[in-house]
Length: 400
Ligand code: NAD
Ligand code: MG
View 1: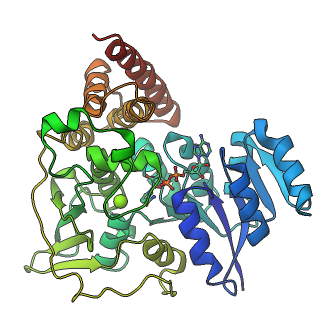
View 2: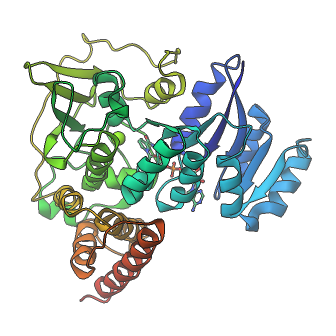
């Protein structure tokens, strides 16, 4: 039986890798729905190749998208618009699997809609889980959704944990002989830059990751190490453990994608060439395995595996995220929102690279976090944090 897939964020980097894996297994998967925010031409190309039933675009693009579909004799594809469209495809009764690959907070409600509809969710959109934490996990339990990590580190950890670990009640303590999670980080393009050098780096430099090709926002997050901070929070939620059981290890080659340590002295690592098709294929087919075009690891070519501690003086974002997780409640949502505003301002060349963690820290210190008891409380914290962060960005632009 063909399984049907909805790809939220089909035109992005993860969307593209997902389509690549699906194209290799047309006998097992069909693309039911795809969504895009701005790259309409790219979405047309995807529709030509995969012929989905539904495509979702923002309402400003609907007319032009309909015209283009017609030009390519694809007018049978139904068009839905805006957030209502995203929610509808994420929860569509004919969809089996949802790839959550929208970037940032915009992915929260569609991902939650998929969770509440009890889907198998391949979670790339880490910001959604960072913001909503327990609420998303409780909803997954309640609605029997399967939340599988696609983020390469979390997918690696999942592969190294005992089977059924995700179903355990852990009380924030590692279980079944697990003692620690080692979350690896490449260190990004500026691993060896001095603080002085970091002041003047450009968006183009920040978006040029040494090992991975990714969207612009996550590329900047990787360069500030905020990505690792968000991943630390993501790991605490996914594997239900306190932050002090997660150690960040800088491993510049990105061959080991993360590790799990056990009480008997064992350390299990998942390794592979850095290509998102591997974790995507793993989450798609789990507990089975399907092939990808990713070449097998050749250890004779990759003879050096290095490890070092992260430097939180030069990369304070990591410490800020750890602090937000320790505080809990709406803190991670505040951290995430401030970071989204700061990264956008950096990409528009309004603020410097080193101002990104500064804006985040300012915002965290300005807002008192609450218990994240409902989605409304979380969304309110998100909006408030965006306002405060925008004000700080304006002050920085004004030289204050
Ligand atoms: P990207 O920028 O390449 O793609 C983002 C996708 O989201 C696009 O399809 C875009 O149309 C859509 N989108 C953006 N804003 C939207 C909005 N407001 N409403 C609806 N759709 C919107 O990003 P990416 O690199 O593919 O990353 C996607 C997610 O996956 C992020 O959360 C990222 O952290 C995570 N992730 C990415 C990678 C990677 O290698 N790229 C690895 C791990 C996790
Ligand atoms: Mg990652």
